[in-house]
Image (tube, rainbow, N blue to C red):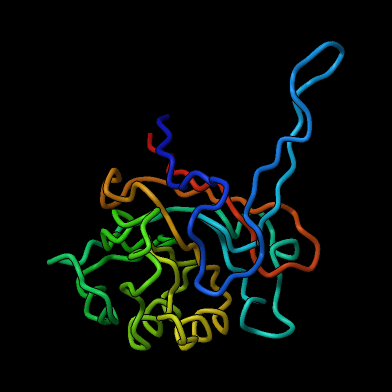
Length: 210
């Protein structure tokens, strides 16, 4: 079995969602010394870096990350690669034309936007799901959808999140290294922290290849 890391590294003061006022720091609380071991503290929001949104993020009364069984965050996946590489704006429903989703749990959209990670451009605008594409994904019997952009929607939008949440899908955002994956024939694992009554969590997402 081979593992491919699909997560961005969390770094102190790295760019995050526009308008986010929470600090993002990895704080060293102790260093190695006589009778002392190294210790650190995290200060970050639940939507930092590569993370999963549970349906509760946009749907009141829906499950949070601690309510959902672990099986909801793992399964067979396919990668869809829009050609040519999309510019910022809605991704059309036709991306799924001819894609066999039988036995598939997750659809991952490789837009190429992760090349801007760590730069201001990454959060200025990005490719996102059109309502039509979100509707097709929501009706495909999936566990979830993921992409290499900041959000399923544009900055002020929520239509795709609402559609996917109503279907019980989890959303993986800010994925990395999708270009390293084959189109299919692998499993996705993206386990959240077991955070009580929380709508999202950073994950260490990985692809498992036989």
